[in-house]
Image (cartoon, rainbow, N blue to C red):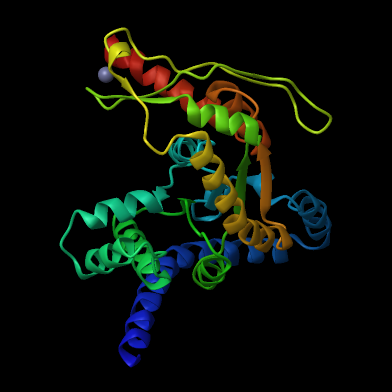
Length: 312
Ligand SMILES: [Zn+2]
């Protein structure tokens, strides 16, 4: 027992070090801002209060990197909603790491570390991965990132439980939690349309979704993601992509994620976002909601300019 306690203290302090390295930078900026406010006097203080009203929705002011660090966001969403796609695009745009717990676990399993041993034994017994191991992986990833000058993060597939969310809150300030949603009937159709190429491993989707709108949901159109002709004869279906399994997976997911959603909703950090179209439309809507259209436009201009330079 004492061993467990001691080792979990170790990972907690490692995590704190990783996070506080980032926080130090932020504190300096905040101190400077406070001094500025004091020297500007009353008029500025009033303006400050007006601005605070806008900050009721912290995500409307996504430019936290201007305060000395990158955003610290969490992405929640059911399997099949496209969470990883949007999380990784936003991470690229905001220049923070996209940390997917599934990737960290897979990566760790490929090494012969004590953590990998713990993971394997939990997985072979069909158990949930222990929080201690999860946080160790996360702090290892963040420490490594901090040493490379990374700041902020978008967490994907984590936290899964309220307990994990509480521990995470002790260790890092979460600015915003994006909760991606998609209607059940559409999700099921999407999952049943998934195909994998047996030869190149490419992921495709044959489902053409045209769901009518109702009183509380918009109509949804999602084009299929068709394979190139050379892959077409090699299409396979994952054994667990049957309607029964998909529906069970969804039900379990909702049971598990509801308390985590409620935890963040109570703190005013949860942003529900209905996916109602293909990737290009959804991406544009996400940018609008997060107030990031300008940033995206200026980054694509930069990209275009550097492309022109390279071809010139
Ligand atoms: Zn192929």
